[in-house]
Image (cartoon, rainbow, N blue to C red; front, side, top):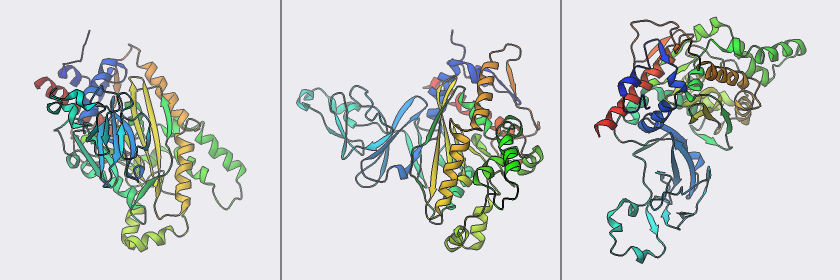
Amino acid sequence: MAQYTGNAEAVSALVRDTEVHRDVYVDREIFELEMEHLFPSTWIYIGHASQLPNPGDFITATVGRQPVLATRHSNGTIHVFHNRCPHKGVKIASEACGNTGKFFRCPYHAWSFKTDGSLLAIPLKKGYDNTGLNEVQASEGLAKVAEFRVYRDFLFAKLKPGGLSFEDFFGESLSTIDNMIDRSPEGQLRIEATPIRYMHTCNWKMLVENQTDTCHPMVAHESSAGTAIKVWEREGAGSTETPMAVQLYAPFMSPYEFYEKAGLRVWANGHGHSGVANSIHADYSDIPGYFDSMVAAYGGTRAREILGDVRHNSIYFPNLLVKAPVQIIRNFIPIAVDKTLVESWVFRLVGAPDKFYERALMYNRFINAPTSIVGHDDLEMYERAQEGLNSDGNQWVNLQRLYDEDEEADVTAVINGTSERQMRNQFHAWKKFMTGAMQEGAAA
């Protein structure tokens, strides 16, 4: 029997000030409501303009359960559509990316569409004479998403009309994307390789929470990163240079005090980031020639400002992670209530030394890949949590660390780096967008 469908009040009750009910992670009905209401009502990252360099290039993505298609038109503009033929509903593009040439052709009945989505041709079109085809939606071509925005080459889409504008939804949080792009002397990023794709047996929100959980690295990663550090301390005695791999692993064993002082920043609408005053990305080796190129591009003061902002993990609610100092994003794509596909993309800093790209690729392999020695630690915790939440011993998950009864929602604030406030911030946004969309649907 449906417990939550059509019941915004019951969904709202799942989130308290310092706790969330286990159903937000394990209940299939809640997951379906997220797919129906949360994801279509928020701004979702779907790709990067560098993936569409030429006319006819396209990429595909999903927003919740809904397939979408982004393409570069002949005049250079980018368009985003629902990835389904207006005739019988067949997906127009089934590949992750490609070049369609001058038009898309449905593989079922050969209806074809220009790369701006407009209807180009229908086989035996005379069969529709005097049928009123021009009066129905099928004649309009591929349906465009409700709202779409290109922000400094990052592509975001919202499937439901209304709600918060792009600017109001993201607000100050866009400064993380700005910082990652500005690390290029030419102010440009480029995707050159496919992502690492890694299936996780857990609810998508566990992955999002973990990105600003600073009380787990020194515990969960002790056997992996901790062991790697001990090996280097034993074998690297007398070395004049710390290998890149050790530089990437070592900060995971930073003590609680490090994270407390590093700080967290929360923003409105569920966004936030770890690493305000310091982060695990702050002490990598300098790469010759890079700083000089940054000074030439931005001036000394601005270059130092850009490079001195070393945010660790930035969360864009609901499901995007940006790691500006290492030019990586991770997209947490919900598949089922207990299954999440994670895509980890690496960007090249255009105009920067190749060593930066090498370091980003190495970080992605060492930390985010199925073969990673660090990522497996997290996956083990996710799986244990997904299983443990089936226990009836306690149906609530605690998010109370450093809670202040006077803390406000939907504000910008800098706080202790071991606080769980960003998790509370995310669930405040979850409740707000879920129940708001459900109420709008009921009113319609």
